[in-house]
Length: 507
Image 1 (cartoon, one colour):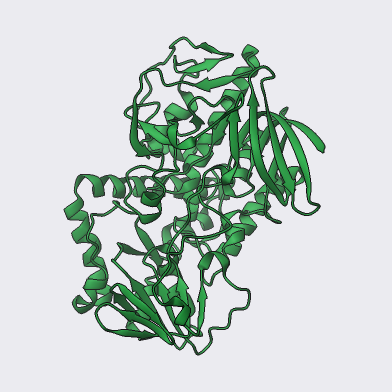
Image 2: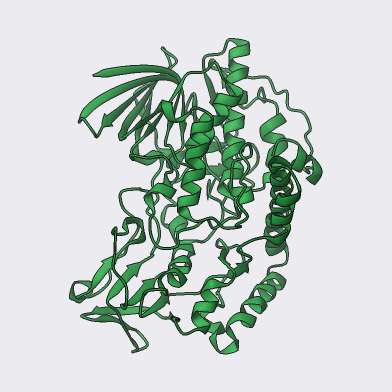
């Protein structure tokens, strides 16, 4: 068995993993590291998903890394552009050379006596098992199963004579020209697919069980584009980023504080696009941000509906038929291709088996400390992004925090760090917060928990997280170093960050 030793082992070469590796390069240049990636290329989600029109569902000024300006004018970028951006970043920081592709991580075992993780990975190219020893492990695997998406079994689906496709495994070269397509789903994937397929398909129908809040945004932000023309890339990026961070935050906070007002506003904007007669397809039975808000560039979905290239159906499926889907209302949707955009199958740590001194780790029974460290698990971090803003905002903060922690341990001669909940403050809320989205509800027994108060509570607020993650005391009475509780040296930190400092400082 081949054996390798590094200071830090990063699992996953997607947006989070590449970001973590770059932060290590920038802040801990003396640390050796390796990145294990099961796929054959960089990109994670953006390498896996290849369906028509795949794009970000957050603006790129906040979805991009805080240290790498996004210089294109588009607000929402397509998958290939994001993949190029992540790959370019990896090359710029000499991360690509440290990635081991086609490595499926099987298990990770921590030894307190040795202050070391031993990680076993299968080299799927050779069939050999490899062993990696590391002082610290960072899990950047996301939160879903790459092997299979979530797809319920539909009554009578074996009768259907056409093709059934899941977006997570889009067939290369799928021919849908001149064909009738039904897309089952109401989330970001379905909303992206429908207008993207109308260029070739005879007709596309979006079949949803219940509506989602949808907001149109400009494909190109005119103010952002102007700033990019007038200012150096870095300054323009920080200004655009700071503005969009604050807009996202204000919209979310307004939705929580004044849900009925924001509901009327969002529905009013949609009504202008589709007319009163179609509002039953766009009027959710929940308040804004109880589930993630979906965005469409230049109202492309609404335009496809107005032009008659696409249509909406809000109903439940009674059964598949030989040539389509029969609904409980009695209506039949004819289809040659059915796309099941029914969501993700949530999976933690990429399905890796973890143990601490021989005791298996059940992640669902653990809290997360600052949304980064797993309670009771030494020298290990997990990267989760925000659910109410761009994923990368929190991923960057998490990686910066880990680098701070590693430098603190080196400066003080510590070999181990672990967060311990001595108050028993756990709740039933998961690390992904209180969203009622189906994939989160289905995963309630898989995700780590959060506590009733900080540092165990995940606040989903970038501006409140900045002072805690970047300047909060590391010796806070909650972290244990080398098995000994640290003294509580917490200082009061501001709950608000000046927008100008956000733009021109590190953000």
